[in-house]
Picture 1 (cartoon, helix red, strand yellow):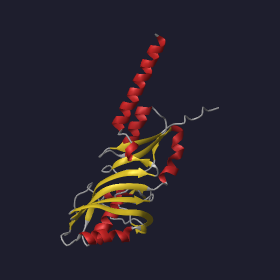
Picture 2 (tube, one colour; picture 1 turned 135 degrees about the vertical axis):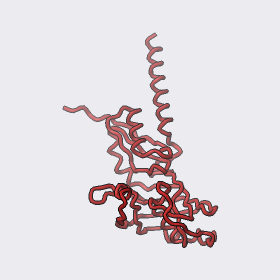
Picture 3 (cartoon, helix red, strand yellow; picture 1 turned 45 degrees about the vertical axis):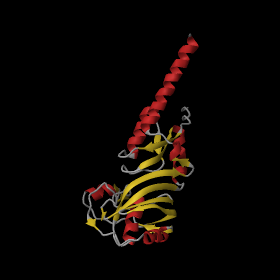
Picture 4 (tube, one colour; picture 1 turned 120 degrees about the horizontal axis):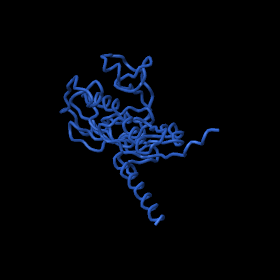
Length: 236
């Protein structure tokens, strides 16, 4: 008879800039020594913020967590587009933005609120004929991914300092904020890319309660040190 799987934990990790979600999971797996570790929703390497990581038996919760709404803050920078819709790739076209008034920018959010059709960027983890789309993109493919319906519950402009437009978005699972940035800039009669992104919430899980991988590792070390000290005191 096999041993029951440990209950595990649901960990809130603040993913650093430049880290892949896989790197964060690998770090937590090393720190916890857990056999099973997974995350509830990928973050791009250039994004920061909340990554919910589950260990052992808690990995059963991943699907339910992934279905919950997400909240992001970020910056759309006008003036040029990139193939990846963010700063992972170089500019491929330049656009004017001096014609834009604040009222125009604020009112344009209406068309991107509610249920909308969205085309994911080719630089994404979506599979095309069994191969990740971003791998095809890096090989020079110009394939176009199918559109999908997503729900933008809230799209708020929090600051304008052209060429930068700062925003907050509450959306459904499967929403690509890079695509939202690209489409929004296009609707303004310009072109732009996502220059910053932070995931601040997944359901009731919030970034305020998250630790960086490095901070979590230190917490575990302190706990181990305290356990050892307590054991030594008990034995004396």
